[in-house]
Length: 221
Image (tube, rainbow, N blue to C red):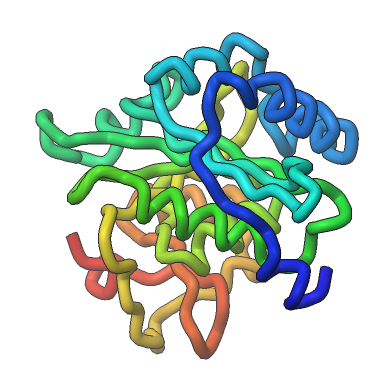
């Protein structure tokens, strides 16, 4: 996709009338992914979001075809409950980036990052935001890290599927300085990553080194 084609995409909040084409794009994307990479969603999931349980934004090509969407869900997913794991305030306003899809012809153009940015901008002021991503789906968690999310936990959720739990606050992203004590993610096994996360380390994107784990004294509260 050229820069001109990207610029000609039309973005909008989607409504109940878009339910079927959102679901159709979701099913198309599932065909290109392995079962451990993307969580299959039901038509009822999208219906509930479009009926007030969240918001869905989408990008259409000049002909009106839906080429990308992103979900912002109100409240924690009962299967993940980051508020129980991350010591968030009991009255925290929690919203989840609960999945996105990009048509095959539009991949590799950082549309996932654009979907993340737009959903963060759409979130309630001060909300606690989170997302999940399979370790086997680096395109997903790389994009989230690049947009200011941190890997906070490694958990089995969604019927025992392994997922990173990533979080950030609404508003400007964390600005991370390069840290001498950081450890590159690709040099660590998942077991080693899990041990670091349990000790307060966090996964971040650093400008100089890319995806790394930073120690608690760098990670902050």
